Image (cartoon, rainbow, N blue to C red; front, side, top):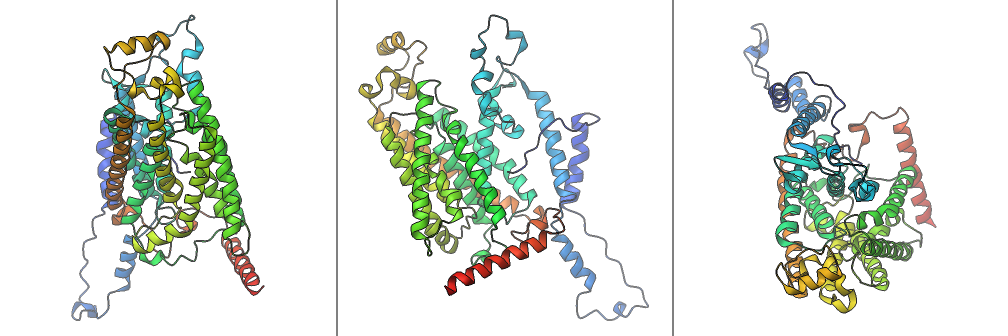
Length: 507
């Protein structure tokens, strides 16, 4: 998991504006160091009269230093500036919402009416996303009103960034990843705000706004960072028993918590229950299918750990767009199988194809687990919207599909409000109209994320971002202080894998 900056751990002296005036020139000096003035050779030196045929060694060393990947100054300065900026914005714009304001609490308040008790299980703390999303969704009276729901939305924004990282892991530096996160959050916040405010869609599991956006943003970045030398693989792009075990542990955590991810923004009660049930059913069917496909398509009829780590989660994505709808358990089961199958063959055939022919090196296969499955999920959501009617849903249809509720002033709204107290006026859309808006949201989200990813890729490709060379890709020792036995363990693991492969081929 990538490190996000938390505010409040450092003490600063002086006003925030004075700190910015000091730190920003320092940052520019670090990123663009001035060239040293040329030193004329002494008269006694032969080079004063005869220019050298080859460049001096010091010049080549200086050129290599310009390509340095050291994080000693770049990353701390960037993080420090970010912390100061966030602290300034928090001081100026952020305050408590009604559920966290002590002035509005009293002993007669029902604790379950406070959003903390409803949403605390999904608590997260991502400062940058809180600020950016807050300006678009929770800003009024000149302040961002902070509540647990802000943290929940910020967690989803964090998930978007982590998914996009999967396209470029191993061939980028921590500085590049940090800048990528800082640029992706605003693009995501604007896209989310525009889609929810103007297009208005049903997307409880985030198949459109989270999975599709994150996928195509990451693919846009990796398209710009294309490295032809990595198309045939890399010597250090290998796995080990220990890394596979850790990855499977991560998969188990995702598997267990995916139902809470899909159900977090659904209506409390029946809708949330359906969301949890459909997610578990979809994950179960995709897990069973993943084991079967892995054994069938392995040359020796064995299970492949990469399939277990990735393909088993596809069902959680494919049920996302329709997770709170009355799609029936068998539909959730079928969506899990469809998503798993598409994801499996995407890893096997599509990822190498787009790397060689489309210049898109999808390092972790996010297009398979989030792109293809997101498209399947969005299509299933559109079908569920077209099939929704009052005979199946009853009056609650206008709660689940809130944009289909009668508009203000419609007599039918008054009748429905007698059956469902608190029902808000909608837009009066038909099923066909809402389906068209869902299609519009899919294309607009993909377009916005792709353009944002391409522009972000151009920024992090700048030479002072400490980008590793092709030879140094997938090398932890480049940016991390590794233990003394790291090299021997890595060599031993590689040799054992090679020897095992030779034995199996001979057999």
